[in-house]
Length: 269
Image (cartoon, rainbow, N blue to C red; front, side, top):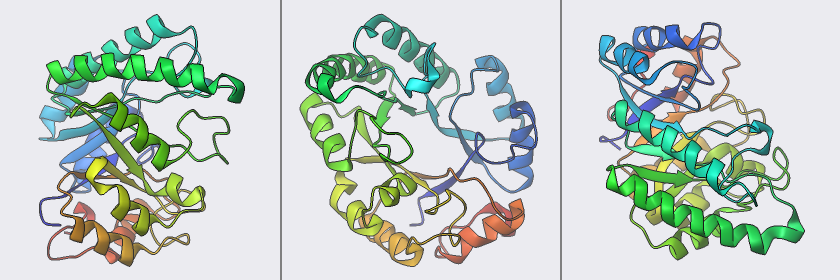
């Protein structure tokens, strides 16, 4: 796992401080790679300046959710084609400015009776989005959200996500593998990672239940990291959890489950 990088999610960690200050806090904890869900409270050039100040890179940002964030995205929402495309292009502008290679698109909550129509809309939107992103050298990623936390979310499972990605047929559309959502859906994270790794463009980790740091829930982290190592995955690993312990201790908890000689979190390096 030597070429992997741990990426601290500034939307879920260091939340005691405003976003503008979290870059420095991440740097002080040893992180040279960050990711963000929604950086849009700050102008893109301001985010870039903070990254440059602390010699950091960005692994991933989410595209904006639009005017109804409670819908958890727009890609599959009927009647929101123009809103989706406007939000996507805004996210792509940030990704370009920040030299960020991954843009996460959320698909939205849809009514079950409209699922076939929503799927047709999603495919049309994502063929377009993958083309726009690819032209800019950016890869779009999508994920399955668990039905407990987000009932009605369009992408219902990792298998559904993989099927959709296959239909788009673009090298610029990949899978975001999130351990928390995987486990909350009742699946075995290591087995699912092994099954879908050819499609995976990004990995995010959090324990389950609770979405806190590894070691606070029921996921078998030693097995998961072993599977990740064997897979040859070379992307970033996003720390998208909400810490239960103090920040240094929660990073130590991550280190407990990874190969210390190849991959470490900065806080204890």
